[in-house]
Image (cartoon, rainbow, N blue to C red; front, side, top):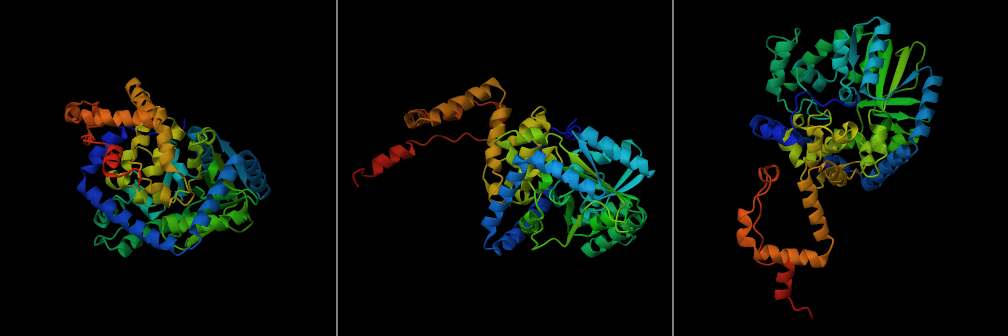
Length: 466
């Protein structure tokens, strides 16, 4: 078992068609992504050496991935020496079983959670619920999603598809401690959530977290956040269980200097994270006295073996690509059928899960290939390149393969392209009668070829001797 596809999700085109018709959703997304996008651009423009930082982040990640086995063994050694316990999980089933067993061994039936993409990826909350264990999300946006019996739709802002009025109604309906006269003022909503969570923080014995980074050199694990709820989970409980994708590793503590600059500016548009929590093993009388680190593969080793696709493992979950993507801004995160939405989800999910389902086969096509995602990525993932790479793998139908093969053959030769353009111009009056498969024509208009190609126009209007 790798990453689960959301039960009952249709392919991206079908899900997106319904999402685009939701005017309130589109309004919420447009406002939120536009605001974040503009703030991020200003924060990045403050750094004259942003291109150099971006390149450094890329090279550090690539080096760590190239020597992943060495650094993972070093991390295990350092964490163990500091009093922590390291576990290895090949897939989601193993990771969920490990967390369930570790919680049961404490005798507890409730855990508090730090916002974590890895635990969403493996469906941990659902697995714990089946085992009779309640997982309480403490991140404000994750709490909104959980109380609303919903799914996250954004990496950074899981409840981005909800407006303040909708959040107020969720709190009034699902939160017993919410005041009857609760308004949709952000401060009032945050205060209601704070009061709801406070008792849980003070009584919880077990916490579950993800990890933004782990340092192989020291065995240090880091979580960065904006609210402080994560720090409450990381310091107050007696037992801390961290589920970390193996690609989150960096070789040395000095490498963090780069990532702690590019991540906050790309995600929350802040110069630095308000809360950066780092811990190395356990320390008597200070923080959790039992620390378990679960190193999750779940398809990552297979992705690393793909020369083009492996760059997706550089991702630091900043969500900058979502906020500039015209497709995401209209369809929203739910249409992707995965915990990872947007451009990064379109290349990460099909690789982690494999292009075996209708959902995963459709995700590489959930893009206009405009390239905006690559331009903002702080670790320089060429998402359009990977999308095209995965499209070739997903194009299994004979007609699709034949069409792409013919297009490639034509475009590789200037003479053949010239002949094709001449033929298209000659037959332009018949173009409107050409029928394409519905999968193509339902969402695209076939343009009428011009009377002459650009090359023909150039020759007729320019003197070659000039």
